[in-house]
Image (cartoon, rainbow, N blue to C red; front, side, top):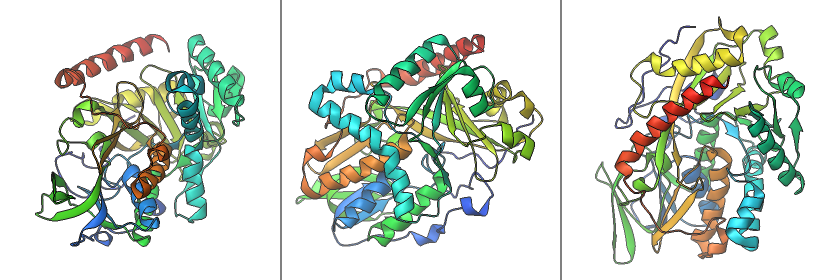
Length: 442
């Protein structure tokens, strides 16, 4: 299976248009790049740095609460990780309800459980209520278990969420084989609250309705300096513009740089690589994910996959830590694809791309407020679609009334990871080792 270069690599340091991952018209951005060029001159209530799920959701809901909002994005809307997302809308966090209750206490823990349960609803309700032009399927998400240990963990997760009324259930080996059409799974867990969206269309539509609500959105305005004077925050861009605001929200996540000292050192950015096949034949499509669920597996270096609105199979997973250099950097996904679906060995890969995700040491999102009116959110943990959409609405409430109870996660100080400069090397070595172990657990 040859891996053609589907489009030019996206170099983080460059600001240039990024072709869409798919050439299907409905998957293209509803707005042109020139649609978002509004840069206000007068002071505003809130400047939001970053035009992804978090930034745009915060902008939308903050504007609807009557506050003046300016969004700054260093590239174009949809050019970063949100537009290049895996498209899986999964409720919950990396941790199960009982862990959250134990570590955060009954009150805060229950609030977190309730918030985590609601994140997928936030996305699909918004698509429905706002009539967004976003292709989606809401038939659930399967966590596929390839070992007995993973299957036992799925059973524990199922017990906890079923006790709280969630629409979930365990899948036997025969059931997961029928649901996925893939080889090698012993069973799994189906969460029917979840689903699939086209992430690029969703990002663009968030921008559209945020602008319609009154938020100003400026593309190609990279924020390079942050300061405070006479009670107002001042955000300067590399183009020489300066915006003054009562509050600033940094929503750059895995693309965080040195704008706020120490923040980038609190996360480990990872590259998430994806490939998309040519549209599947009707025979293949009938046996691969016939009901349209999203899937993530239980491997140490997991792979995740879904079918698209135009009948392709999209599969993703962790890639090299550095920027990709050649088509060989996607070869591990080709191997995973054929391992799961041998019948796809002759189906060409037509598209491939990558984006960044941010991981925190405790695998939880972090909300920081080092100074009053200066907020930062990092750590999607690979669940950014629902998590950041829902968190943006809560952030808007906090900006409007200052009530920290609006936030599901407690405010925490910025704590850089010790020896952060060497962390990437360690993570790269760990990924290589885990990938070797996974190869022996076929």
